[in-house]
Length: 306
Image: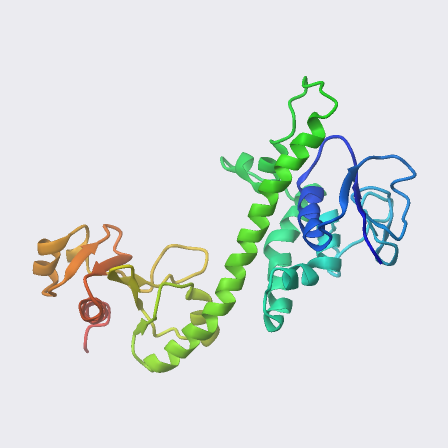
């Protein structure tokens, strides 16, 4: 089967067919996007994928719409948009095309579906509405803001805008997936470091990397601070209590807040102490030994001996 055309609707575009196009153009790079509502084009044929148009959903015939009377629903009853349908059908192949390791494909596919694809589906179907002062900065509305203004009467304006928006949409999708893949790579490193730390409250990592998910997975509730190298210095970083909040399991000492260089060395007694943030969630030291000393002093203050 050779796919030569990717067919979606003409006129104003939305996030769901843009993001679907990101997936499909990666998998079928030689195919041409056709934006139309012409009946001949939106009729299934072996050489095309049809999405967000056609009023039918039949993966076997490569048509993926959700506007029909009885639209496709997820197992939990939540609605699909065309993006969800395309991701369900092609997402794992797309991850393989991005060189995601095979043993990570299923988990990244499911995770991206839950926290990126599903919200797009819900917004497109009117089941979720972005709210608050940042509502206009949600991804669906940002992508739709790239449409031509109402009085741009150039017949090519919509297609040019779609092409520009597709480039931007691709950047968001690939960046989000790169972060997820990086977290999966980091997880093994962090889990090894947790084992090496034993019952200690300080976790030492070989470089800066995502660590919260692995700490939660390991149930390492005893850990309070992470020490890792950063360029030419070392960092001591607090660990958040919860994934959604900013409160830490332990703050760095109040006496260090906002201090730098000699003042921080004097307050901490650690030669090589360089900086402590006013919010007390991160400190910087000149080398590994100084960073570890700061971390252990912070642990001693947070967990005073009985």
